Length: 189
Image (cartoon, rainbow, N blue to C red; front, side, top):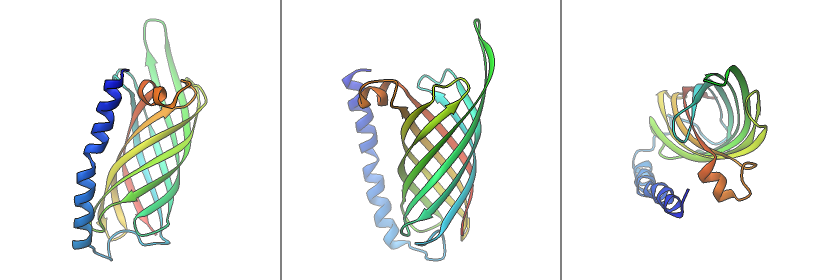
């Protein structure tokens, strides 16, 4: 990928800053202490996941579970476990693959109302059939929609990149990244 693509990706990420700023100002005006987590709460979620390469040419499906601890009303630190299955057919190959990933994550949630958008990052490892065991990092964003004061629907998009496929982090971010999509249910307790 070229430097132009790097600039374009950076501008896209920076383009979300006005949304974050307005979410913060809305947060102060719409704070509802009865909805969502408070410092010291835990969260557990179970989600369906999907992943695709940059060109959306191949993919996998699986299940993911999160267990997190709220360091403040808006910051959660946790562990995420995923198990994925892929069936790949082609001219030279027809096979089934299982793989998993374990990673730590930290997210910052905006607003304290029924809708709580968040941004964050993760760091962990991927292992199993059909993948090279490696370490990866990711940026993530999503939204939690509280159906009940402590129960929510979750939607998340991650951009993950492996470290061992390139000697430079910038090359890994651009050239070996994958998109992962998650939809699930969670609770704070």
